[in-house]
Length: 329
Image (cartoon, rainbow, N blue to C red):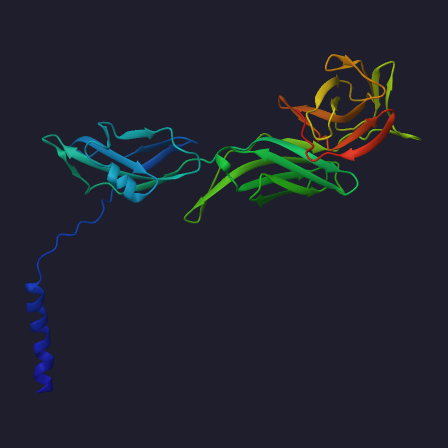
C-alpha cells in the first residue's frame, strides 16, 4: 500500500498545478540605461533606440517609488531622442530613473518591457575658502577650516607638509587640527564625500592652501614692539621665510571686526608705520588690538596665515592675547 501511494503522489501534484490560474509575471527590461555624464546639479542618460517606439517617457526622483510614479502620461518627461539631461538637481544626491516607451498608434499606453531602471549620483559640492584659523607656536597646534554648500559633513583632507609627508584623513567636521611640532608649513586641499550602497562619490578638490606660521611680533623690555608715536602706529615683527609679504590689521575689540590698515609687499620687511585707522589718527591713550599676518600668492590665490595672536595696546602698555577665531579678510 505504501508503495502504491508513493507512485500516486506525482500525478496528483501535476493535476493540482493545472488547477492553479496562470499568472503573467514580467521581469524588468534587460536593456541598460547608460549614465554618460554627471555634475553637481545634472545627470545625462542615454539608451539604445527601440525600433517600435514613437516616444520615450522618463520619470525620476530620489526614491524608486517617486521615479515610477513620475513615469506616467501627464507627469513624465517626453522625448523622441535617445538621451536626456536632468538639470537643477541637488549635489551629492542619488536619483532613480525609470524609462518607458509608447508606440505610434498607442501613445497613452506606456510599455516597460525593455529598459532596466537606472540610478545615478550627482557630484557632491566642492569645499571652498580653505584657511587657517589658528597656529600656536606654544602648543604646536594648527587648525584649518573650510566652507561647503548644502551642509555637507563628510570630507577627505589631502595633506603634504614641509617634511614631504603626504597622507589623507577623513573628517565629519568642516575643520581639522594638525600637529606642527616638526613642520614649518602644511599644504592642504579638501574634497567632500557621499556614499550610497557602499560606493563613495567624491567632489573635485578645493584649491590648495598652504598654511604657515603667523609672524611673531618682536618683544621689548616692556612688552611688545607695538607703539604709538606722533599719533602713528608702529609695529615690528620677525619675518616669515615662506611669506611673499605682510598685512597689518587693527580692531577696537579683540574678537571684533579687524580692518586691514597696511600691506607690505617686501618679504624681508620687519617694520610698518600706519598713519590712520578708519580715517582717524591713533590715540596714544586709546585701546587697540593689532594682528600681523603673512601672505603667499600662489595660483592666483592669496593664502594668508591666521591672526590668532594679537597684541593688545592699552594706553602705552602691550600684551599678547589669543582671539577666538583667527580668520581675517
